[in-house]
Image (cartoon, rainbow, N blue to C red; front, side, top):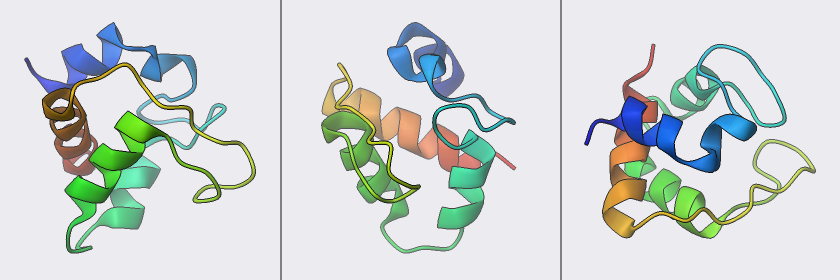
Length: 82
C-alpha cells in the first residue's frame, strides 16, 4: 500500500494535511524539519504509532491504529514530501 492511500485511510487527515497546518503541522513541514536527520523514519514511525507530545507545541498527537509496517510506510512517505 502506498503512503498517500494509507494516510487517507487512517485518522491522520483529521489533524494533518500535506500543505497546510491544521491541528498538527503540515506534513511538508514535518519532512523539512526531519530532512537529513539520521534515523528520522524510525523516530517518525514510532511517533505515528505511539503518539508524541511537545515536538510541535502543546497539542499532543495521540497513538494511531497502525501496524509497525504501516507506521514505517507513512513515515517514509511523509519524509519524501517536498
